[in-house]
Image (cartoon, rainbow, N blue to C red; front, side):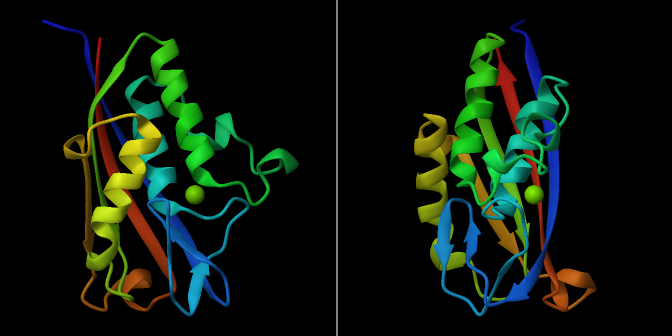
Length: 159
Ligand code: MG
């Protein structure tokens, strides 16, 4: 059997009025955006952590410290590309990634396919290997109160 690795990632960002909202590499028109040192792309951060988790390499905070000015306001797609390079350097390929975004508003469905295409292009994968799903939390919890966004992700790697 091939060497297969699975990884899980989870990220949360607070929402605040007047900030850009960037999720899954796509800018979405909304009144609120994610509070962050980077562009706050909570989906990409969770995917990065899933990829790094599969190789037990820690998390993106370890790779890209939020105290570093190099990463201030950085496009998270650059971070994802770097993480994919790390995966390749370790001799692994990405089989597929999946993520679920928990956000009450706005509706993300119209943006899902653009997110998948954007993420697939950054990772050098066929789009059918990249899954993005979105759910509300039925007005429950911080996501439901529109105080924040959370994303879960899993990734499968193989040699
Ligand atoms: Mg984050």
